[in-house]
Image 1 (spheres, rainbow, N blue to C red):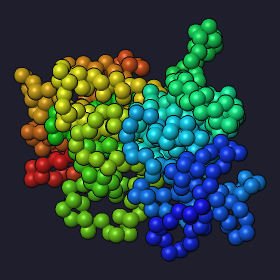
Image 2 (cartoon, helix red, strand yellow):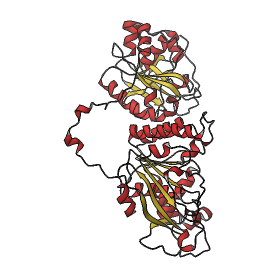
Image 3 (cartoon, one colour):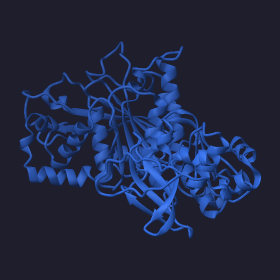
Image 4 (cartoon, one colour):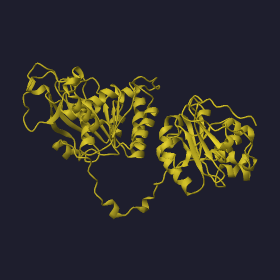
Length: 502
C-alpha cells in the first residue's frame, strides 16, 4: 500500500513511515484505518501499529506504537497528548463518544460509517483525569457525551472518575455485551455496537439512599462549623463560612463588596489553606492578582495601581509566590456570558482544580449582556441561581457571590441606608437559594470619623437563623485592609483629604 504522507514541522524527531492495510482479524477495513491514519510499519526491527497524535490544524505532533505483545511507546511531543482522533471532529455537535482504546474508536467509527464523532483516551484508563482536564472545553461543547469504556473493573472505575469531572446532565454510559467495543464488532457485528450506543443510559451518581438507612445516632451528630472568621460577632451569628453553600454579599455601589470578597478569599487561602477560584467579571485577572498582593503586603491597592514601585521587587515576587502561585485559579473573562458556560467553568474549578471556594463577582453581570428570556432579568437570574445551587450540592464547593441592590426611595445605600433582603436586585431566588446573605452599610458622605466604617448586617443565615447587626469594619487607609472596630468608631488618621476606595 502507498504510505501516508506526514506534514509535521518537528525537527526533533523523524516519524516512522508506514502504510495502511486492513485488519480483518479485528474487523477493521482499510477505509476505516485510512480515515484514522492508522498504519503498520517497523519501529527499528519491530512490527508495530502506528497511531497518530495531531493538533487541531492536523499537524502531526507525536506517534504512538503498539507491538504484538501490547507494549506501547511514544515518540514526538507526547507529554500531554489530547484525545485520540480529536482533530477529526470540530467542536460542538449533538454526540461525542469516548472509548477506552484506539481500536475501540476505530470499531465504533466504522459502525457509524465514519460519520459521527468518536475519540479515545490517549493512554487508556490511566489518562482519564489528565486528558479530560486538558480537553474539557472540547468535550463539553457537545450536547451528549457517551462513555464507552471497557466492561472490566478499571473501565468501570474510569467511568466513575470521568462522570465526576463532566457535566452530569450531559453524560451517558454505554454497556457492552463483551469486554470492549472491538470485541462487540467482531463477535456481534456493527448493528449491535450501534445499538449499544443508542441504548446508553444517563449517568446516575452513587449516593441515592433510602430514608430507612438513617439511624438516630447518625442524626444526633452536630452540624460542623464553617471556617472561622476574624469578625467575632459575625462568627457567633453564622458560625463561620461553609463549603457546599452559597454565601451572598451585597452593598450599595462603591461601598466595598469586591474588597470584602477579596478579604474573605485571602483569609480562606492564607489562614485555612483553602483553594480559591476567582471569577471577577469587572476586572482582569492581573488586577485581581494585584489586589491579593496588596492585601498580603498591607499596601493599599490604589497606591500600587498608581505607583507599582512602592513595593520592592523582592517583596512583590515573594507575595506573588506566597498568595497567587498556589491554590489560586482565575477565569480569564470579562463581562456577561451564558450561565451554562459559567457553570461548566465553575464545575471545572471545583472538580478538576479542587477549589474549596469560588468567588463570583458579580451575579447580575452574568446575565446583563444576554438576550433575555420573555420574563427578563428575573427569569435569567432564577435560572442562574438554580444552577449555582445545583452546583454546590453536586460538588461541595462554596460560592461567595456578590449581588447589587435596587434603588431605594428612602435613604440611599451610599449614604448609610439599611439593607433588607427585599432590596436585592433581580430576583427573589437570590435570597431564597442563598444559605447566607450579608450586607455592608456605609455612609460615603459622612464625616471623616464615620466615612470609612461599614456595618455588617446579617440578612439571612439558614444554618443558625440569626440575623441583625454584626461587627463594624474600618478601612485602614495606611494598609488598605479592613479591621474590626472594637467599640466606638475612631477618626481616620489621614483626615478629610483622601476618599476611601475599597
